[in-house]
Image (cartoon, rainbow, N blue to C red; front, top):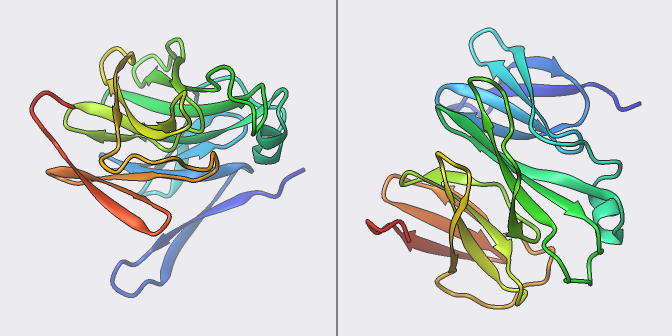
Length: 212
């Protein structure tokens, strides 16, 4: 059995821990959104909401089917995988999942999905394919965005409709180039632009009215 985890709160000025709360094992992804803190189970796909004032875990939401094996299993292939990240809006959570069925060096079928989970009735919509090796999604400009490998083995942006959870478009990164499948491109959303960082470089992605 895995030991219980700990979520720590730090003082932004002193960088010192000021409070901690025990959480269940397997919670490795931290999402801060709209005044709440969420934790995502990497293997079981369960979102846990933590009240930042009371430091208590309040709500568990099942975002998808649990995996039998984690990151190493996803590299090998078979019935394995892990949840790579999530973002939470006022209405829903969007959870990215890498479910391996071919292994690291076989690129036959899409292995990654994103699912919209309503915060009102806690129901998950049908997961939508988004490519392979998705990274944590972000909310920006009224859309949900994430990076994933396309069929040519290149990292690109995937745009998700925040209301329906459907894939609304796929777009190349400004400096599109081949990546090793385990390379990660992290998105950060600002007020007027997104930033994509990977392998020692940082790109600014401008927002245009069409959402592309």
